[in-house]
Length: 364
Image 1 (cartoon, rainbow, N blue to C red):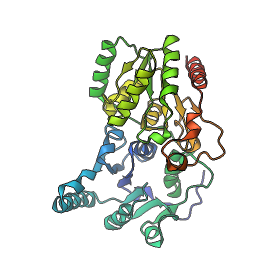
Image 2: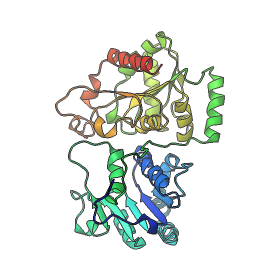
Image 3: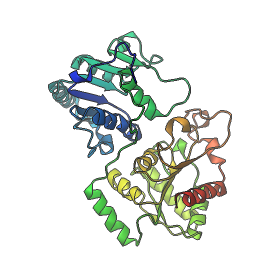
Image 4: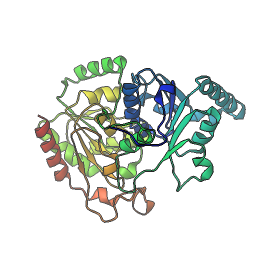
């Protein structure tokens, strides 16, 4: 199919690409189709990433990525001189790579001035016109807009390539997550210790970094009891934050059920290796849900203030559970910014159990 874009770029002149994504874990993971599509179409091009240090596990080991550059947000805590030293070193590393194309996926000012500093032949970014002005837009050779109607964030990321003239009609747009051999070996031993077989357990993560996306202790406790009585084996996980661990412990205290509680005990790579061998994942709109999608594991996800059309599990069999509130999705941090979303709290446990049973029957 012929492309009629007047300013499409000539990829034969592109040797190195830098992708900038300075956001959270799940946000970074959801950029991986951009790397794999580019690498598949232009295998001779080096593709690098610039991300925050804490999000490196989302991209490390990815065969489509050549170099991962890191910004450690703890630099600020080490004093001005150390911060300037680290920033200078990073700029030197980036400049030495001589990028021909910068693809920006963040609305932070750093992305604009960094692109100007690197001075690539081509650069592309979303306009973010509601947040940024003309100086921002003049920092890039190509700009694109996100549609007003809801669209999955993966497709919005891929719009950057469409804006450059890349045709994606037959592209594989799947997510990629690599747990790595160390994590896989650790999980194999862990499963043997708890007498769990691959595809013989469900991973449930009832927490999120943003708990206004969360359900409630009683609901999860009821679901866990019903699932265990039905013969399902559960493995409960959470992030390392003390509040998340305490949240899981409160659920466990609510009902008498058997489950393997690994809350706060796994690294991100180990969590991925655990999910990869599960029959199903149950959770919230969170990084663990996106990891399950990347690993091809069926998902049941509870959604409240965030828009499932934009953030649902990508390209995997899934069921999204919501309540029909006229105000959702509101993208707020709880009703009235009170950190509790009522549209989630009114979800009935029996409905969740029914959806899980139906999904497991469909996936065999």
